[in-house]
Length: 332
Image (tube, rainbow, N blue to C red; front, side, top):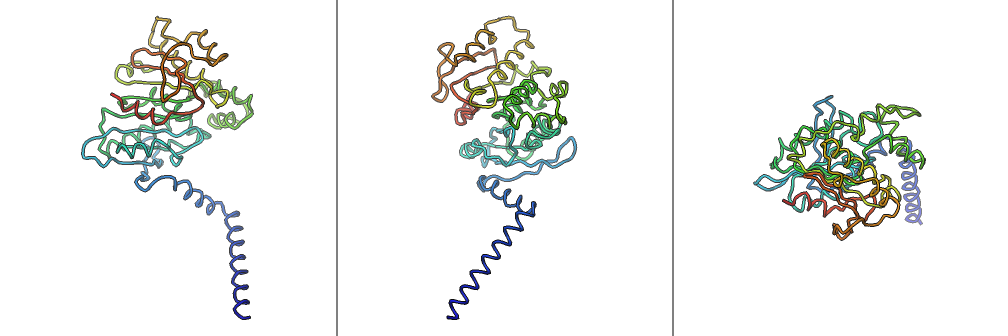
């Protein structure tokens, strides 16, 4: 009888303790965020470490997940940039692939999710990306002739922004499903009544009205193009043909940016550009415009190239073909 009574009392106490802990966590935001951080970090294997990198611009600490190659020889560096709503803790399929290939890898924060004025390809955010590369060069056995910058969605946006403004000698830039014009993207998302329109206003420090000039300052489509970079750096822009319908970024962002670079290079060969007719056919019919082969088993719907600049519209959505993307970066 006493044993049963003792078990009953113990069970009640455990239940009460659990309820009290649940109430405490619900009311204490810091404790709850601790739980979330542990869960977020758990997707990174133990071989990845967190580096704290001081901004050369404002001395703030920006964290990065990093993997340092174990090779005694200098190895390439892959700089993988998080998506629009992510930060350095965001799961990144490239990370494990880089570890398997024993490549140097860094996944910087660059002011986190794009919903503050300090994020969204600001001067601070782009300096953070450069600082992360500098950190890797100074602390890892980096082959400085083989540094690669890659990203999808907001990471593609940041990749194109880094191409336009990075101080580093980058061998290849790989941008997937990128937004390039915040003015257009704001209007597109305002019609859909989703969070991205509000995010853009927050990036610009606006309440309800889009500030056109501020939006241009954070949109690589309107920036000066460092065309001399394309003499030694390769830039490839990828977009899934169904993005903008099933995904969040219309392919026109990638197409318009590619055409802008050609114009800034003063190219007169009209066949190298994506024509209005080609753009319309892709948007209306979503069918291949020729025989361009495949990437990762997906048909290429349109391919344009001029020297070290390429545009590939493929059968896909708002995505990166991760294994292909990394193999392409490493390809000589």
